[in-house]
Length: 341
Ligand SMILES: *Cc1c(COP(=O)(O)O)cnc(C)c1O
Ligand code: SF4
Image 1 (cartoon, rainbow, N blue to C red):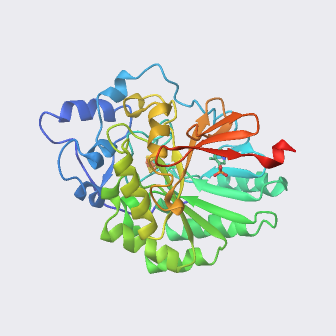
Image 2: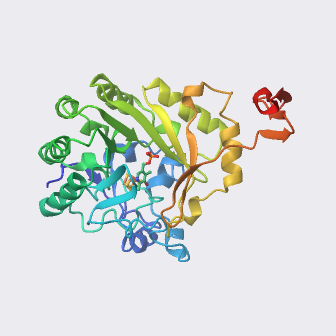
Image 3: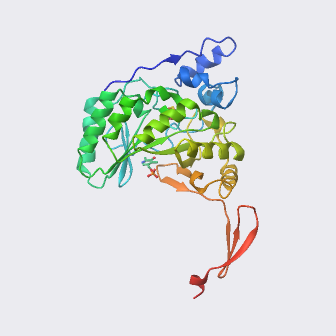
């Protein structure tokens, strides 16, 4: 399979920063699309932090490269089968931007070659032989970094398997390389409905005319658009930023789906916030903005045990009486009549 060609900028040629960038990039690849680099307003801003290498990536040596044990849940190369009815297919390991906090830091950019046709064939055989699999999630890297012909091959092969009823694509392309979303691509994707696309916006500054146009084209093509945000220290760990992000997404036809607690992946510790802080941010969303804009806050448990949704603790029980905390902080009693009988 082949990749789509895109512009990349080189960032390692700036003076004081270059030594750090070079040493980090020898371990974790660095790549920034021209478009995404153009969103940086100043060094250290929310866009900069997400894409520019930081020496702290090398200092974090305690955490594990693959805490979710994706490798051990991989019955054939490039396929992760954790839940009975759905699998993740890693079709690409290239992205327009290598996010410094990536949970697949061990995988992305390594060798830059997409899944080969032999590997794809084995993965398809595995899916075809497992009738319990109804939902296939294309991930990577970024699946939309494949060229149109390769994408078409993957999608049509999946579509040909009767028990696969939905296909999902996890992609950051609308955020980092919106020019990849072309009328031609949308015409291709439309043939594979029901197709769900989960994109990955982390900050309101990523919502631009270009990303709005990209999402609009996909939505016009009938694609259901969701969003997965990663909670990142110094980037979006703030209720006001999160409210602007989530409501801004609704405005570009994207429904917030998950807010992820950072995985314990080596090289990313400087982005981690506490779950307590995350819960406070979620508390700042529910009731304060459109319910449609509130994502599920999830922790993906180490050891491949799956995602668990967590909620702020707003229920206290005394017998059949519930004491509920409202979005304004008021405590209100509510009698649980069914339980009382
Ligand atoms: C997140 C994930 C899924 C999809 O989970 P949903 O809750 O259905 O979105 C499937 N497989 C793996 C390995 C995952 O990490
Ligand atoms: S786009 Fe996704 S897979 Fe690629 S580096 Fe960023 S977080 Fe990782």
